[in-house]
Structure formats: structure tokens, C-alpha cells
Length: 330
Length: 289
Ligand code: SF4
Ligand code: FES
Image 1 (cartoon, rainbow over the protein chains, first blue to last red):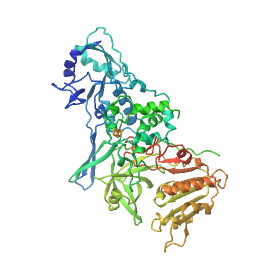
Image 2 (image 1 turned 90 degrees about the horizontal axis):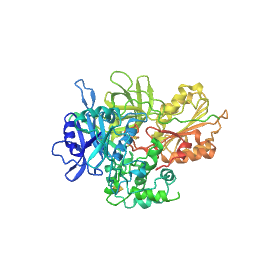
Image 3 (image 1 turned 135 degrees about the vertical axis):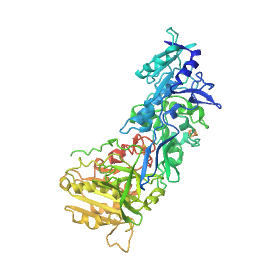
Image 4 (image 1 turned 180 degrees about the vertical axis):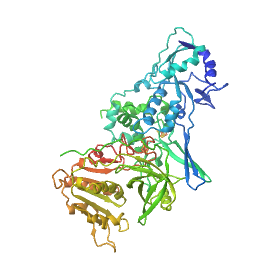
């Protein structure tokens, strides 16, 4: 089955009648996933959106519960459920993998995050393979392929002027019913993508676990501004803070993205801070991505999307770090 | 000698992020800046019960939350012991009996009280480190026959800083085969007991690491960073096996359920894998202190 590229607009129009369909779009010069509507500058030709799609599942600010006083003088708590039927359409393999990693964080290890789970169940994922990865893409070095996305419900393989359509899950299979009018039973030549940026990731997690006290952390952290940009644009960074806003006798408790790059992040009552300088923070960020997460979940928390490489104002480049460590004999 | 094994990541999913409302049914003033808060839900039940060493998160309705070990519990209540150190604890201290708070939990792992059966026990705490230690000690006392000799070494910098004085100086004095050793770091007009830091006091007490039955005494130690450093060093010097020394690790926490990401020490999340670890395990961690 294929869908012609010039039929995509019509397909989106149809799908958007029943669900909110998030597509890569250019909005005020920044590319990100936005709800499809007529006139939106939809861009399936971008390698990757500037901002990752994580906020669909894990909003930058998420209301958790409302509370206040009851007539009897006690208090009530009322949980929010703002989840809705959503389609993530046109996500790339690296970002698809990032959702698999967020699933591990929020849905496993004893506790299920009720807010993430509610939205995750209502999300359909449609992934487009990358025929032409960007210069900063290194997904292949992180064990992914630009041509596959095993976790996507529906996979669209990029061809010259069409996409080859495959349902990969039951959910995807069922969803294809709505696509029928737009699909054609024709063969097409898939354009395979290849990343040009190649890193030697072999053995890096093991080496890192022995490099906690290595001088490399002093060296690379010197130029970091602790601005948090890297964690903000990262599709797998998931740290959050919890806070509240009150109005009269009522209030809302919400969570919002936080960053391990901020000094306040680990400061304890009494102002003891186990990660007082940027050296400890930079080290924790990279170790978490490339080593700690592996110890805990058996996976690497970097998908090779290249966003932090592109956005860091001081070019603190994770690919250089990986290469340096890969080449070292730690 | 059977090995003591600390279980990790064993908290059973209960309240994740949304708290329950609970009433403060009793406040005990422990010291000038420490109070214990006994909580119960408005329907008369406990919000939850925990295993010895597990913690809960208590919050001011309309403000922040903080993490506290469940310092005591009954059938229909739980209690947290709170030192006034920051904004939220300041507000907690301003509460009166009958006020309501938010509470969620229980989180974290617990003291390996089953593996410790049959052993002699040495409990060591400094200042506000006693509540977590007491959660284990209390369990041993409730199952007195299952444990051997029990010693408690507790110190504070001033007389005022000592918590649970009633138990220290009355209740526990009468327990069979138990020694209570209290010291102050500094002279105090109200104090005619031992004046010593914890490590030298331990050295002086020379409590045999093998225990009376030769099985290896289990030491449990909680306190500030310097007590932890000097105390554990002393224990190892005296010949305690690192796997027989148990402690709790501390990091800043927000979620308590292993999601928000801030409490990690290396690959371990203290809120979920901890807070209880053996010294043997701590030694294998890459730590920011
Ligand atoms: S984006 Fe660069 S400068 Fe900013 S916190 Fe990350 S590594 Fe540091
Ligand atoms: S407190 Fe959130 S992960 Fe431990």
C-alpha cells in the first residue's frame, strides 16, 4: 500500500475531523509538532523538528490536581485528566524511539505515572522514515535505523513521490480503516537513508562507568552556561518539578519541565547541594544519558537526533564526547 | 554467616502523584525545632501504612511538599517527625491539631528486618537521624524475641537537639538486654552524661562486631554527612563487615516514585531503589556528595 505525497493534505484533513492530529509544522520560524488545521505550514520535508514531540505526552506544564476547601471545612482533591485522542503524525524514527524510552520511565519500575499513561493510551503514532538524514543526525551510531521504527503504530517509508504504508500494531491496523480512500495498491521504490555522522559508541557506557573521576568532566564543563537548552530540546529528557498556583481558597498543583543543568535542581533544605558546580551537573547529564540509564533500563537515553548539538550556544557536543571516550582507553 | 540482603525497588504501587487529605490528630513537641505529626484521614483510617524505613511525602495544602520517613505508625495513623529547616517545614511547624495536610506514599525500600533476625543489633544516630533509625529499632522491640542484644548509640550537639527523650531516658532503659548510650558533642549544664563525638564514643564503647553468637552484629547508622563519614569509618576499623552496616542515603526528592529524575546517585534513584543501602553497596556507587 502507498499514499501519494500530494494526497497527504487530504488525508490529514479527514483524520483531523475526529482526532487532534499533530504534524511537523513551521510556526513563527520554529518547527515543532502542532495540531493540524487548514492553512498550517506543514513540513514533512524537515529532517527533524527543532522542538521534540515529547510535550504531547509530557506537557511542559501539566495540571495534576485541583484542591480547596469544602463546605464542611475540610479539603478536597480532584485529579485532572486532560488527555484526548491524538495522532502523532510524521514523527521520525529517533523521536519514535524517544517515546519508547519515556514509556520505560513513566510506565515501569513499580509506579505508573497516571497522567502519562492516560495520554499514552490515547496516542496513535505514525512515523516517517528519513531518506535524507541531517548532518547532525547520528541515530545509526546509537543503534537505531533511519529506515525503521519498530514501535510506531503505522510506518510510512519514504519513496520518491509517495510513502509505503505499513501498520505495525493492531492499533495501527485498525486506524488504517480511515485511510482507505487515500491508499493505492501500487509498488514503489523505498529510498533508504544513511547518516553521514558516524560515532564509535561501542563500549562507551562501560568505559564511562569507570570515568567518574576523570579530568574530562572538568575540561568539557568549563564552557557550559547551564542554560538548559540541551535538556529542553532533548526528546528524552524528562525531569520535572512540582509546584502550585493558588487563587483565594483554591489551587492547582502542576508539574513542569525542569533541568538537571540548573543549580537549584538538587539543592536540599539547608542549602546542601550534592551537585554544586557545573562539572557535577554536566557529568550527571552525560552519564545519565549514556551510562546510568543503561544500568537501569538496559537502553541508552540518547537517540542521536542531534538537537542538542545544533542548539547548544557553546557547542558542547555530545558526539565529540562519545568519540573521545570511544577512542580513549579508559 | 548468612548475608544481609537489602531489597531495592520494592515499593508497591500505591499513591503515585496525587495525595490524600489527612488530619493532624496529634502534635508532639520533641525539641525546640522538632515536632512529630500524627496523621489520620478524616474517615478515621490511616492514609497508608509503611514498612520500617519507608517514607512518605507530606505537604501543606496550597504549598510545597517534603519527604519524611514514617517515624511511627499505628493501625489507623502514621507519624512523621519534622525538623524545622526550610520554608515548608516552617509552615508544618505552624500547624495545629485538627488542621489538614496532604500526604502520599509509602515510598522507597525498607530495613531488611527479616534477614536481621537472630542478630545482635547496633543502632547509631545523630540528631534528627534518630527517626529513621527508630523505625527499625521499634520493629525489633515489637519482636523482641527475634533479635539478640540491642545497643543504641545516639548523640546530639546539644541537650535540646536530642529527640524522643522519653524513650531514651525512660522507656528503653527498661528493655531487657538493651543498652542505650547517649552523648552530647558539647558540655551542657543540663547534662552529666558522656561528652563525645560519635566515632570516639563508639571506639570507647567497643561493641563487638561479631555479636554474642558470632553471627556478626548488624549496625544501622543515620545522621548528618560528618557523622556518616566518621561513624562508618570507625565501624569498618572495628571490624564490622560492610554488608552488615546499613544506612539511608539522602538526595533532594520531588516525586518519590522514580520519575522526576532528581534523586539519582549514579544509576540508582534514591526514592525508589533506596533510601536503605548497605555500606557494601554504597562503596560501589559513583557519588556526588
Ligand atoms: S545547551 Fe550547552 S551551554 Fe546550555 S546547558 Fe546544555 S551543554 Fe550547557
Ligand atoms: S524523587 Fe523523583 S525520581 Fe526520585
